[in-house]
Length: 259
Image (cartoon, rainbow, N blue to C red; front, side, top):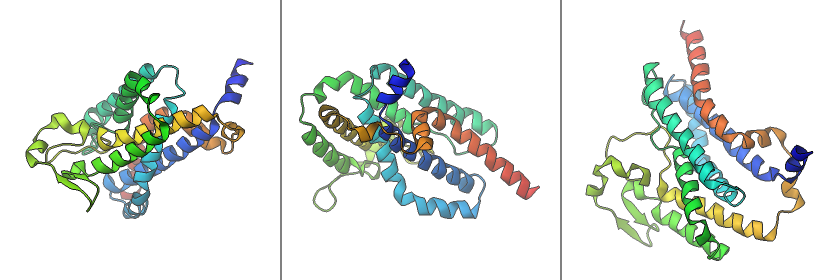
């Protein structure tokens, strides 16, 4: 009975949107690994075709995570689990996979590292969000996302309207890697720095506050695409296991072709 009540009250629309983002991520990472590690030409063409949509889908995934912070009963625990999973991914990609012959696959501050930090930060400052008008919060954070978007290229601003060049001397240490500031030669196979993506996370959090205040309509609780809903509910597990599984499939295909 309790399980059926939870299932009835679950917001399946969020699961399905998150599931779509996870599915795209798995497909994109799969072809990226096939292209980068195994040199499959067809995979490189698929990656090139999908790349324009990758940023949008990533922002969608990040926004959904921010949105869901308003529904979680314990964001400190949730954030710690996500960050722990990110550190596990670093262990696998930076230590274990190189021992198996996979090089340049290290993930130092990927999507899980970022989301873990973002959720923990939200847990600490969540009361501030309730004091800000939700619509104002969305607009301000969208503007801040655009303003900081060029930080990896040493610039801040709004295109031709305002451009601030950051000093190259700032980009000489690895200690600022989580903030989008890193020295020449730094590489992370998956990289989502706090700046600018924290602002997209906050956009999702403010949208969540707005929607929660108005209430969720019946459409949000209806399950329309069960496979996407399943992926969305198990996004963390899927992210952890999909890279080694894809790498293994690529190895089998490469072995079959070249031996």
